[in-house]
Image 1 (tube, rainbow, N blue to C red):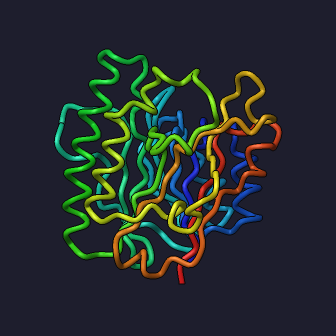
Image 2: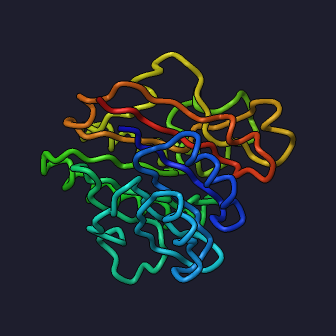
Length: 256
């Protein structure tokens, strides 16, 4: 069983890229972020034609998350992160797929920091930590997948000083990721590749893709029952090199 996460950076603009990748990689489950489409603009027909059922929560111009399942219909369990009913940003969706609870999340970027956007990032993260703890405590097989907008460690970003003030690398942001791991979640990419440099994002600016000047922002965190089944994990880097590509590449796990 292959589960992937992919910040698509506008699902309609990059629909051809997405469909091509689905055909080649054939993931069983896909968590999408940054749909940049309303619910009505989500390309349901094209995705169903490709063999995938879907649940999604859209938002005009930005945000938006979805979960796709090959030859199956995800069973929606939650379409918002609990803890703040007034928060209208479409950043979290959760569904049961083939016996696993799967969350697709798009965490706030937090820039510029300090400021209101960074405060929102940290507040949203507290809600994620609380909900993740509840999910982990159930003992169910759970995967938290998505663009966490956190570079967990210095080795998860190319050598540079240009990001020193960026919200992605601040101690408070990295502390959020560590607190999730301290709950017991397993960072799948790092588990499989403990010593390798792995990136999932390459900015469009300054020729960063060609220079492999990347960051690891997209993560798959596994509960104990899923972690025991972990066989492999990786990043489909070639997708980032396609014409009109998202600035992210799909990250994935393979389960026994």
